[in-house]
Image 1 (spheres, rainbow, N blue to C red):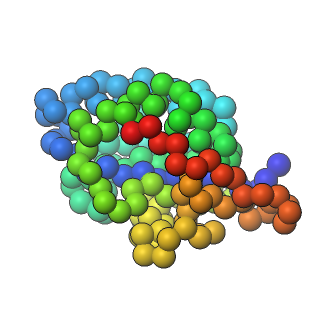
Image 2 (cartoon, helix red, strand yellow):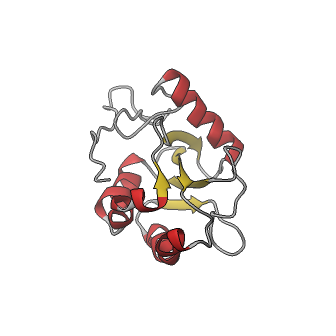
Length: 165
């Protein structure tokens, strides 16, 4: 078993306040999608308030940017949740609720097992990815890197660009 787990951050620029009509269906689906994540194989942790969501967590990227951050056993577990569960339904509707972001809005990186990143740590990883491209420090599904303690001859995970959104 690896001594590392996979952290992920994704950000979205909302089209209106979370309590506005334009965001109503997104908000109505949050509990269901979050519960699906928490019940998924390989799930370890997600950023959330005492109320159970992350939409009210302050974002250093602006008041109109929401953050979603979680930790998983590995790239395959996160990939399965994101692209092979009912989560895909929500991803396909992204444009209804979120502005298009022309730069990277998802970043992956490895953290020591049982340690959970802060929002500031995660945003620093996203900025690193945006400035330098994928690396062992900050990467994407398309160009994922193996955990630091993976066997040297083990291939890096590869899933291609399978985003249905």
